[in-house]
Image (cartoon, rainbow, N blue to C red; front, top):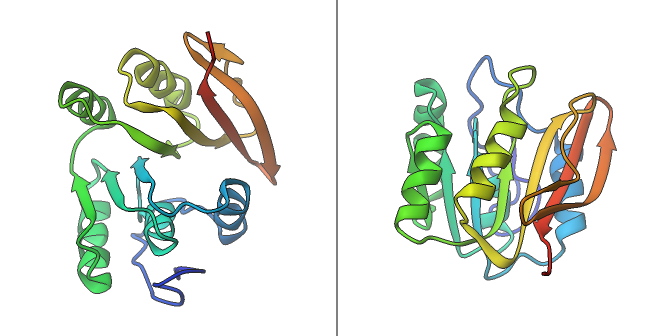
Length: 181
């Protein structure tokens, strides 16, 4: 896999066997929708290869945390961080729920939280519920959830509100933000 834009444009990142990496068209769409990500903090849950997060760093995000529990994915992410010399990238080798709890406990906040959980395991809604309960989203931040198009997610969950969806084949991107109360 290659980074498509920014200071790491054209550089390779490793994609472990057996994962479903975010397709280039979907990665491009995410960043076309987001626009300029310079200076933002970025969290990628269920990171896999870390492709979306590495794209964010390449485009100017100031901090990246990648959360991944699979050992072969962790090794690939570590190697990609090393190859890119991306010192602002941190890998949390944990289950997603544990990582969110740790980040919440340390009072971390993120401008963008991207998650692409494995399909057909009901992890999208469960993780969204965990993110609502453990507020690690900055006040003006966004949660971008990549999921299977037939997976039903709530329009509202606590303070989180769905405000946009974009479909790419079998993939749906759902965008959440905090509702103004």
